Length: 91
Image 1: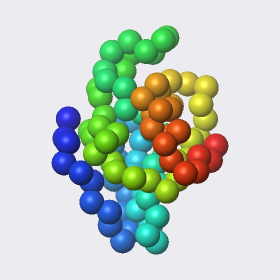
Image 2 (image 1 turned 135 degrees about the horizontal axis):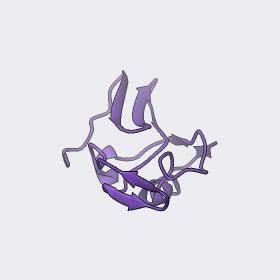
Image 3 (image 1 turned 180 degrees about the horizontal axis):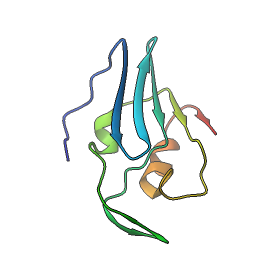
């Protein structure tokens, strides 16, 4: 897993794997559907690969966007913890 901090960009989307993406737009950093758990069994699902970057490599975010929280493949345990550090979470 890469630990190099993800630099902010003027306008970019960086896919971290699964549903998780970092969106830099207009000075804002948005993370969609944060999933940062390692590969392995997670409830009724088995995650086959971990994230491309750990949550601490994403850096501060302005907003977390969660499409739905009912499935661990869209909001896992580490993703939920990450979301709670953001100033705003939208679902």
